[in-house]
Image (cartoon, rainbow, N blue to C red; front, side, top):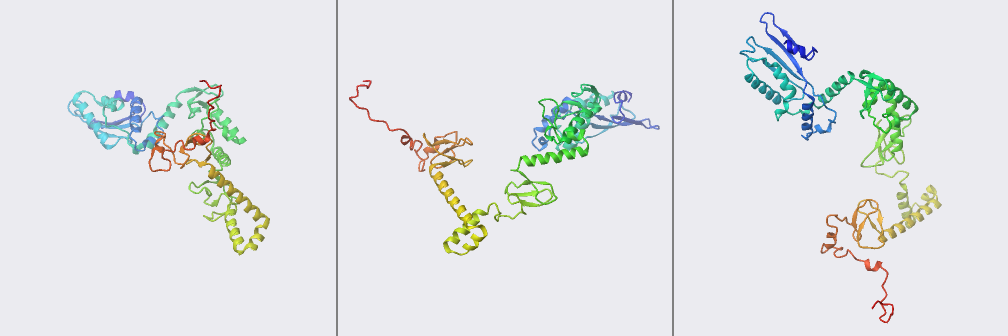
Length: 425
């Protein structure tokens, strides 16, 4: 007991009691697995493929300790083995049972000696000798939380040079960012607070030149809740303003919040306040019916029908204006002729729909927009593993048509005059 008490000074790691009548010892030891063993167990866990790899394990170097509870019989260690029980959040009951069995084997080998130290050593360094010992995926959050707490505890025991003021500071007054650069909290708080007060939230990052790492957990460790809230608000505003294809501001008066545009219908946007609206007309969401911006198609259909049968023509002209309707009709007809011409003289890329015109060469085309290979005759994609196979499929419209039109693209060659004295023969 004295030896273990000398090793584990912290009472939270080792504690024991003595029965005054029987003078029997009982207690518990919190055994932390060695970091090298921890690293191997973590690597093995991430290869399981059961969702545990979704957690960032790159910084996990400490696992929660294994609790070894013991009771020493009167004839220990000469005759009786110590009575033990094990508990650990990241080990399954089956794994704990196998470890207890290994401890029984150690007792049989070292009977007559104090084996508690051997038990502790086995838990700390020798878990890898048992192949089936693995991290229980149900304890992922406990493992991550303990690792962060342990790393912070050890970090606070060290001394660092602040990379801003270049003074030596205790780890208790420093913060290590996600990029591993260390700054004192006071310097970093002053720098980030100034940027947030000015509204320059895109500059809130590691102040080391060339380093652009910044994460929300770093902010919460340095800034006040009010500053973090202001940073979040300004960052959201900047993201919405710069990416209108995915976000939009709520049009409700007094809301001031934003929403993400629907992935299946890009015109639909639902604000965080719950209001669903159309991004185009800024009115409440109206489903599949046309809004003011897209109404030209519907109006033109009604206008054409009205020109044919005369029903409702005067009403449409009064509502939209005769000159406006005629101008819209002329523009639509011109666009239709242009589309027909483009469709007749080009082929659409099957991936991005960009129209491609073949000026010369064979019918194996490559899109200049997305690099898709396709057939100029039918518009089908062509696989790169066998690009000519498409033109060897018998019974199709493209069979043996790879070079169709090539000779027509070239300038005609004049027949040689046999009496020409400039001929080389």
